[in-house]
Image (cartoon, rainbow, N blue to C red):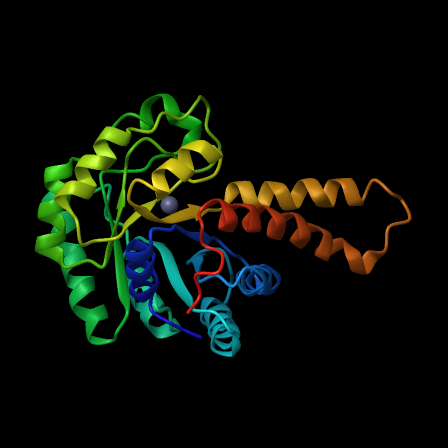
Length: 279
Ligand SMILES: [Zn+2]
């Protein structure tokens, strides 16, 4: 069942669970994500970056077809739409949600550009995710992890001004691999939740953050957790083990990567109490 991301996140907020948003790159990964969702009877968000595939409209159309034929609710989100081109590509490709990431811009410009995307997308029943504060890169965690965290009062103001459906917040996570140990500012998260009681919140940089931190975040008001690096690394590790046997079956090579990727995703689905929440 193809649904908007807003529908999934409001359901998650109401029922106190988190939703994994795995980044996919191709047909095999898309199938794997839907298979895990169905196996766990869980709603699911497929995240796609505009630059990961040479034919995004084709990939989104493929995902839409999988979602429509699926027994569980599935949303398809354009991750980190950076500019006007990404927004148009997202709308034309058939995403059910678009992230408008203007988190590197000053507050006023972030508001102005996000507002414009919200206006257009809501006319088309497309959900919108924005980011306030800035989630940086794990390789520079020493600086990115602690700088530009979301200011709770600004978050509340931003939501009122833009009308976004969900908000990605910076509370100490980072994208990719952490260069140090992640410190999550749960007090800040609690304050954001208090001031933004009706809006689902998103955590980018789930990989490497640790089960305890992520589980706590989900039960402290985060509804969507983006996962990319850790799933791909799990796939690579399974594949690396598989090819150690010089007589490996060539047709099992790609599936071995997918097996590692899927098992790791399922781990998070169960960790976030997302299983058996499909409707
Ligand atoms: Zn991100």
